[in-house]
Image 1 (cartoon, rainbow, N blue to C red):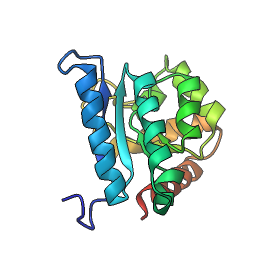
Image 2 (image 1 turned 90 degrees about the vertical axis):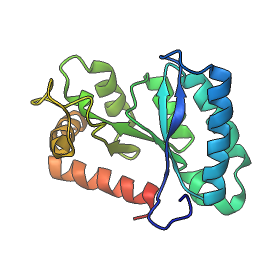
Image 3 (image 1 turned 30 degrees about the vertical axis):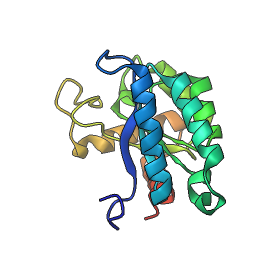
Image 4 (image 1 turned 45 degrees about the vertical axis):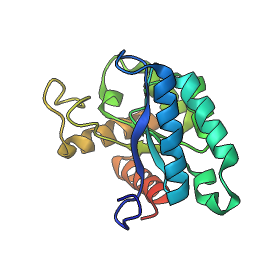
Length: 183
C-alpha cells in the first residue's frame, strides 16, 4: 500500500509514553523502522508524540541526517507533528528540522495560552489545520464529538491568534498542506 499513488504520507506513527502499553525502547525501534519505510517511499510522516518529545526529536534528527540527497523533499519538509501540544522550544526544534505543526481545536480554548503563544511566536509558515476528530473539538462545539465540519472554527481561532483574516489563514494552511503532501 505504501507505494500506491493515493498514499501521500506515512502515519500516524510516533512515540507515546503517556500510556504504559509498550516499552519505550520497543516504540523507538518500531518508529525507526517506520521512518526507514517512509524514506524508501519518499513520503513525509505524520507523527504522534505524547510525553516523548526528547526521544522523538533525537530519532527524527538522526533520520533526517541519513536521508539520501535524492530525498531532498523529505530533508526540506519531512513531516508534521500531529496535534502539537508541546512547548515553544520544542516547536522551534521541530520547525528547525523542517517539520510542520498540526494545530487542532484546542487553539480555540480559553485556557490555551501556551499553544497561542507558540503560534504567535512561530508564525504561519509551518502550521497545518487538523481536526483530530473525534477529539479536541473547537469552541463553540466543545464537549461534542469533533467532526471535520468543525475545522472552520479551528481556522477562525487560529486566524484570530495570528491576527489575519480567516480567508488568509485558510489559504496559508492549505498552501502548507500542498507543500508537504505534494498536492
